[in-house]
Amino acid sequence: MTSAYIHIPFCEQICYYCDFNKVFIEGQPVDDYVNLLIEEFRLWNERETILPLKSIYIGGGTPTALSVKQFEVLFDGIRNYLPLRRGGEFTIECNPNNATNDLLTCFKRNNVNRLSFGVQSFNDDLLKKIGRIHRCDTVYKAINLAEQIGFHNISIDLIYRLPNQTLEDFQDSLTKALELDLPHYAIYSLILEQKTVFYNLMRQGKLPLPSEDIEADMFEMAIESMENAGKQHYEISNFAQAGFQSTHNKAYWNGEDYYGFGAGAHGLLDGTRYQNLGPINHYMEPLQKHELPIFNTLPLSQKMKIEEFFFLGLRQMEGVSISLFEKKFGQSIGELYGDEISQLLEKDLITLDGDHLALTRRGIFLGNDVFSEFMLLDR
Ligand code: SF4
Image 1 (spheres, rainbow, N blue to C red):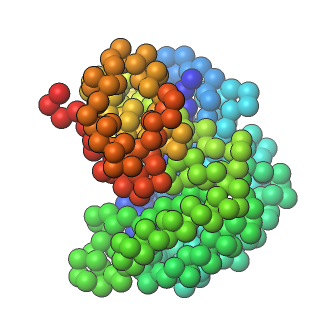
Image 2: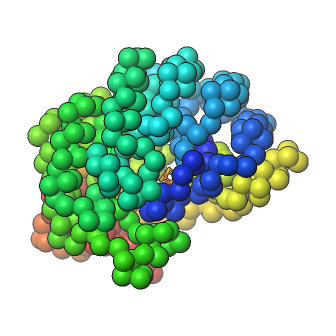
Image 3: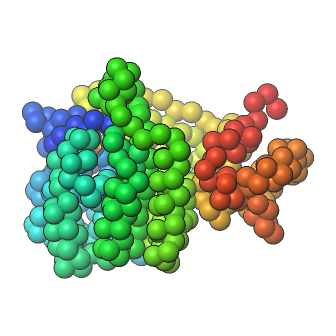
């Protein structure tokens, strides 16, 4: 079964760490963009029958920068062209600042059943320092309101290793996040990406980031706090109560098919990756001529599929199934990776439990070292 990602590339502020495909919303052709997204749904439907989807995810940018009216238009388009199967997951990323009664009620009315709030920290000073416009009290109001309106599947994102962040500060954010007792948490370390304000500050030696040791302690703290609170660590950066793992993200990690709609979005269909044009005007131009805005396609070779099977599969704590690998690729895992697997087992970076290979606690912290062992290079 297939999923769908819909990208809304508009933001009301540009955060200092962000390298996503987004623009400042003021003066942007938002109505046209929404109409052309629907044209993209329609064109895909002309190309092939879109069967009921297992999940729809509207991400950004800041999807909630759209007005209720713009969302109503978008939801109409989704209803017409992107059927969601019964019990399917429908997520929207929300900025706490935009979570008004009107907007959340509109989501509820239109069958959205999961909200993902970009919270990042419960420290207002840190939020200011990273360029976010919301503050802690807005987070509480937003989540309270969402629960009153009837949303029970709620996730929040937190980021650690922020400039000048201390272990105590991060523990405080974790505690406050857990006091909300939500069913899902996503917790990431700050990554410095090129062309961001933070990257430039780092180059000038003006970004006081916590050391790598503190970063590792923060990660450990996150895992312990979440697990002690009954939130299962099911993917390197994700924690959930039973029954609340993200269907949409799991589809990515399991290498399943998904459509990508919107500027710069990418998809994976029948073993081929494709990517849409990124700049908004470039994305909109072909759609105005009733053509799909695909910028490049890449049929995945067997080698790439095998590598992705491990890179993505091992991110999940349950690991990868050996029998599934052999069924999918018609090759013996031992013949292909026997030496690498023995070494990783010896270094206590992975475990072999029945049919499953998975990261150990030590392997979680050294994930990249593990993943690189599964690169096939010239083989
Ligand atoms: S982090 Fe989110 S809100 Fe901030 S600029 Fe990036 S996409 Fe926009």
